[in-house]
Length: 329
Image (cartoon, rainbow, N blue to C red):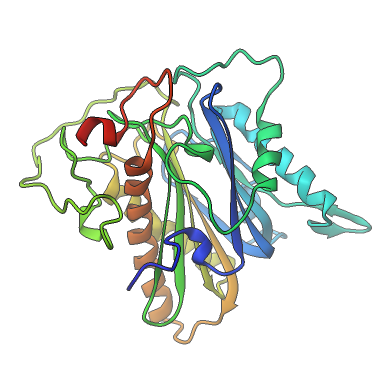
């Protein structure tokens, strides 16, 4: 198991990512798009999710593929980011065919960043325009940390951010993860620099600090924010040929990575959610062993992406929290 050449979700062939952010707003949008429609699914484990078009991702629904997935800041206002993405996709002829019309299928999820010190007194919802800008910026390379949907994100004690990671399995399949970390819990162990995700780090991608001297087994965390103020939203992707039901199992398994990297996670106050995307470029060679390996890879990849999000965050004027680098370097 090794990272892909970029160590980004775009190591999954056929996928591109675009970011757009507004530093004054302290918020932004991230879009994942395929060069053609792809199979998608979702699994929600947090108690306070905010989503768009996720019902249609169930395996028994008519639409089996989507054109893009959107992660956004802005709480409920951020759901409008997907409208900007849909407008842009329609202009280039993308979408589910209904007669002579095309309807882009763009599920999305949001995180809460309305109390992070940014300028929120808008007269018109800015997220539709941010969604369109993110779509216009899609490509194989994109920024991590204080970028896109992670621009205004936070955790229990440090700035959150946007993270990504990838892995190439021995069976030749590729798995990638993309995440906006805005968690009620902590990504680092107690007050130190060590990441909970340390056991799964590859190549010093978040500092190479390894494990802390000890783990606080008796730690009892307490909520530091009000209901609805925290959420970690993620996408895991693979080039494997998966059904929608198999993709849903991939999203479910990936939640293990969230639990490994954020303590606590999946709380009643978080809206933790994972989308899965499968481009279908590589058939499964072994219908039992390959899905087994993909689930493990999705979990470890997401844990790494979460740590990279916080590790990569950068300071901005008016921040209410320090970055990892400010706190520990």
